[in-house]
Length: 523
Image (cartoon, rainbow, N blue to C red; front, side, top):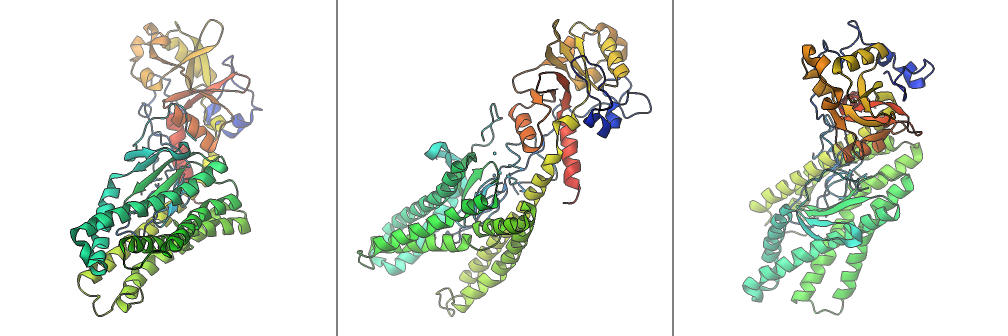
């Protein structure tokens, strides 16, 4: 691709990016690819192209709860998004690395990007989902439900789906209380509701453990969300080392085990068969289930992230760790789908096999199917987010920048296009009398001017002022580049050298095409 310096003259052939992209440096002629700055060129892409970004993918199911849910990533759940479809990135996504610790459904999640993004997020058994720091002027996205507070400066939201699972837990636990404490009558549902709230408070503690660890490693956390089948900590960047990845994943189940131990100690002086005794016992067992489930070694669960860290450490490649943990997660999903109904039918989970028929059998099969789907989807999301992260370094501002020529504001469009074609450039930068860039001529605006009117149209009427955030360093690449572009959505950006010299113009459409092309290549 052709690029120019402050003078607007072609860069010498010794320029590295010039050598690697001869097609961009060649003057625009009839034999070359269409040039949007030429009157006979084909129309450019729509003026507001989508920018690539990994979406968090991954959700963690909560076996202790009455029903499961899925997430998007480690910020995947997002996945990849599920929440994340990385085949075509959304317009100006929140963060390429957004994800939760697990980046997968059915477990604690911490966004890396997935994918987390694509937005990776981390989830626990009582969490959902696997997603980078808050960018200035970021386009506001969905808030995620009812804001409950900001512990450690991280907003905590309760999603509308939480109320559904709270009602389900209240109904199921209330039925159990009817057998254990029949004297409670209708009040048992009030006790059950208290249990549901206390259980999700435990889930919040689990997520806060991931959040505190992420903040300790200076990884920005976008938010914590409590939802249908657990919670998610949307960590917006991936851990830099396998050791940190392991710690980020392990602290969640560790805190759940600590809570189970505290509830056990609190249960000792309490008389069995009382309301406090039943509640403490239920919370102890629920936290044990959350910890045990999330320690299973498959993505998107915390145990899967730990396995990923181990393989990453051994092989030296994060992608190898993700592939291994994702396939173990898929095998785990099949095991849950087949094994959970068999366990409940056999009475291995404490039920009477004779009574375990009818509606109970259907509910067990449904729960197993939901859990399996969440785990399978989360594992796939993690793979997509990892693949995205592997290709992100290929997005380099210097390689994607279009060569530009500087023109003064009163220059007729026809003359500006003549200069651009003569220099082999594909973009126009409007400068002031001192040669300082003040605005960028929009491609879509050029195409909209008929050729016979171009001699009477000044370029200033087709230009967009260079706002804060529209100046991009030529050295930016990967997630850093996408972060800058997402912070200030625009169709074109001015690319400058570290010295302030004009390097060229970066089109959001070019970034998207490069992203899609990179994603199409095998890992």
